[in-house]
Image 1 (cartoon, helix red, strand yellow):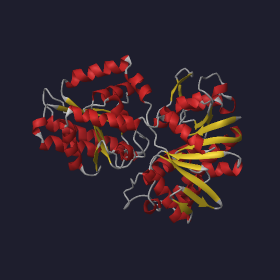
Image 2 (tube, rainbow, N blue to C red):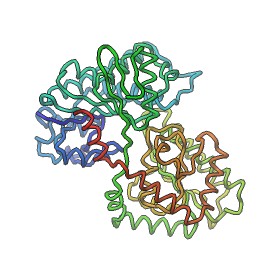
Image 3 (cartoon, rainbow, N blue to C red):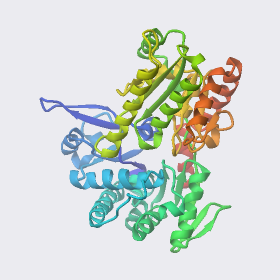
Image 4 (cartoon, rainbow, N blue to C red):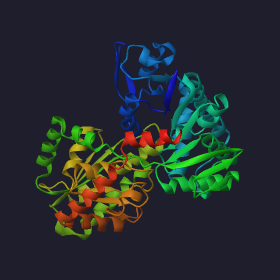
Length: 474
């Protein structure tokens, strides 16, 4: 039985099934995994996650009760849930990523979407079943009075479900996304919106990345549920229970990041990139081709910058690393294609025999990304909406001499906005002007700002972020 448990869709490791039927293990991807893996291992936390691939499901079937730490794998304490693939697909792709993500990031083309019909109701039943599987596993594994840390929008129903099974537990839920304002949250069917809010309010502590997202959640509780909200003390009282609302701004472990960024593979990528671009100044962006990341407008801003400032032709290169995301969803496949079309238009219009104005790379390569951070003169982070954005925090740590252009709609703007060049992410012309401002900014001013940005970015590294929430459950 375990005294501290973490639940998330994606786990700290994944398994790959080779052609000969053997399994190999690698570290899981994603910002949450990166932030929590070492913390969880140090504190002897049991991590409960879903099996995401055939390799994962193969590993689970070889493990008693899905406990991979008892099956010869060096995972730390880990239980992986083999949820039926059809249930998982509907819960993860149709509800979590195609509905809840779209709502919280305000992504819908509302004249056409969303469309909540009988099919959605079947998908919602799968989301309920998926959350119930997590709640039952946590109830089985937790010792009396254990603390349970439920992570993100995939598992919004778990706290209330777990409360029904194990009222002795202390439960926290943390939202890594923004939270929609009430008028947008109301796009959801009334009963679904109510169930989501009451699901999270099953927790003793509901955490958010910024005060803005916490405030939006409290607004929804008040307007949708009629809950009693005390914004000064950050509490929500509903159905006889009070949930405390916390703000915990996840930062970066600067020392660990620098250690990784100093390894030979990163140095090799730095040399290769420098050979490719020469002594030109570098505008860098590192993102997934996620709809909310606003890559197409960022490229449009760079194109407008080149059009209005021909004196910069041949003197600057835009390194745009846009790694494919969620390609099982058609909207994301089209968005990746739009990014590639925009990049080609810039190259066709401005490229010369001895100058590539834009280098687009869509193949995920973490060491190369670290190398780009270190070389950046300007870092462009312009999401239309983002819970936090760790790119905005990692960049100034690895290159304190770079200027940060940051969307005011990123959660990170609450901490970093004072020292960044903040922009309206929809204003392409203003973003183009910020690109020029970042490039012409003196080295001394960039270093002054960058030093302050790096200090803010490392203020609450993952181990302190996690400890802060654990302490809130005592």
